[in-house]
Image (cartoon, rainbow, N blue to C red; front, top):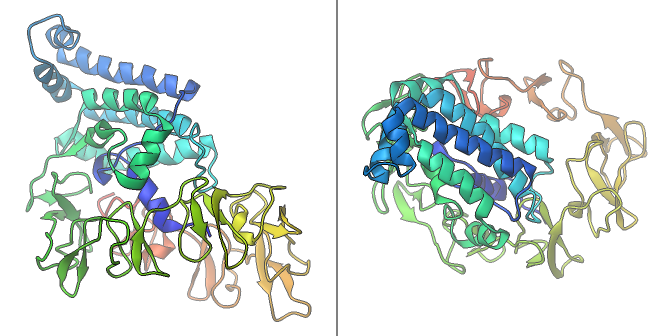
Length: 424
């Protein structure tokens, strides 16, 4: 069994920066994308030096007696934060994805270009981020940006895997310190990254939100007073510490990151990397990997199969192929039957299986504006709303819930951009 959103969220935490307080992944050796990222890192640092003036540039280069901390402060305070962070986001996404592909851990079926595009969008965020940078509510640290990209080039796959399985946030520490929130607890906030360490921006139905300090273990908690993520969970009105050791007891099916809850045993476990042991219904694999195991037996974590790869079940094949989900047919991953063809094992590629037909027959996904299949099913990029299929809403479009938005975030009846909150 391959892990879905839980592992993807954990890995996203490791890859994200700034407002998500995560780190970046890395591989070894670097590719052309990584080299371009390092060139951009030099450009970001150079633009900071230029903005700070010749004295600060000399200090950063070691040409004066000013300390490195002084030089960093001069750089960070004087650089055009909005422009520099935009430039850095592109370099970070390029370097992260290029290096990431060096390690044999395929996640989510994304290719290199898709990875770069998605990470850059996530990093750049929204107009609210630009406004927060310009107003000084978020600080862009050019020195940390350069250290982050240099770290991406130097960190090995074993170090990345160690961070993924036991040390979240430790792969490239500087990447978590590039965009730093400046608003203290109790202050207003318009972007999730504006709050200082130990607090998060809690939004109501409208903008602005309020920086709320994380509730600690055994303290009262609620939607407006959340527990520290990955460390504690709100259970029975107070924050309960999540187990951080393998074998610890799950609380509400949760464990301290990066562990997950093995529902078969009720205990915390590590997600399996490539070639790690696994079971199809308990010991899970990282997103992008699948448990290659006979029914009811243990096996090993393997990359999701491409067309022609050997398989034992549908779960061993890539569900995000360009022609729809690949199915395990005759022991190999293949494109399954399409609309009009009989279903295979109640499965179809690029559509849904109409089990009421004789024989069960594959049907194409309903067009936008048409009734949902079986009263609830719509194709990729669409959602069933009031019985009809409609496209997932972009930022600014009306919504009733986050499930109707591309970002997954609906505030005050409007889709937010990238889950960044109701302020844009």
